[in-house]
Image (tube, rainbow, N blue to C red):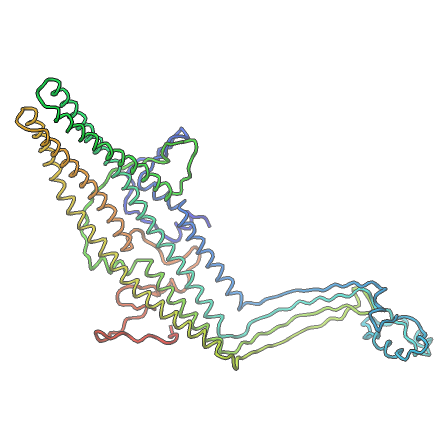
Length: 542
């Protein structure tokens, strides 16, 4: 399952910023930087961002856990075999230290009968083709001439089937919730990635515009310095004016250098988020360039509706719900250890003859077995595990409630930041025009001899401050809007299903995380103010 296919099947991504127009510009020179619009940057991040790729592999890992746990209730068939060869010179030495062949016992020995009985083998399943005639020839059966085979082997095929226990089925249900948790974690990372790419993209745009502002300021101060030098040489202004203009000019240069460095670093940061590798051929050239401006699209927002929307759609909260449901199943699995375990085993076995190595002279048969076990006394081992799982379930429920409050906080914080930056934008729209007019008048007064140089410098500083504040407000509004969409779950729209698989948990209202639902997806029970609701001490019926 490739990344693109997984995203298309598991999530229908709706980008908040639509295409800005134009196709991607493919550079013909390998040393030229790649150019990205906002949508192209987002799509590249969805394909290459390592954090998102790791989250996808986590889903695959949980799918493997489901297969592993589910195999416990399915039949297991194992085949085993043993083949053994022993040197004939060692066979007799292994049996009472003597030989196993011959018709006369060693003088003084009384173990003839015992030795013979030890090497006697069960009757072969191969019929005696000689018949009674051959048996009549041997009228004295007191002597035994038995040769033990130097080759022995056995083959068995056994199947095992679990009939009943109290742990496997809850564990299987728990693995489904683990996969749900990994899926919602993937969605949460994807939403966070969208907001991060937008913020970093706008950071590059604002840094680029700040460079332009600083360059304009440096050019103005440079022209002002040149004008004062010309006036000083003409004898119309004192040396102090020239020194003051030089100080203002050289104080502005570090701000321009800092803005240029911030611009470079912001592009490197976005390249890392997009998963772009360093290319030695480019040298010091940037890895990418961005195409786009800083938009301002006012949006009417109702805070109460936004908070409720965030609770209903945030995968962060649904992941916490999945963790609670998984802990409930783990608690059931822990208590299920007190129940009996019943398994059955059946199969066939083939054993070679001890006196004949022929493949046709074997013993074979069927094996059937039923096993059962029930814990009687374990000194509190199972009870300790149950107590741990109850505590973990309570922790997961408390975490869910805290996560719900975290969603409320994030939505309110993003809403407050949006209000602040919207007001800043409105205030600075008029302020920039006023600062430009003030600078124009200060320069005109200075040129006419009615003003002083300090007025021009102050007006330039005020204009620079207004322009920078306006740009930062635009950046703050767009980044806060991206964060608001993430906090409310509006970055993208998903389907509650997986690739070619829709578990029961995702086909129901299990993950309804609205305000009226508790940690396990049940309707909240009203309680008196100041009274904490009672916690479950064990698993409740679903």
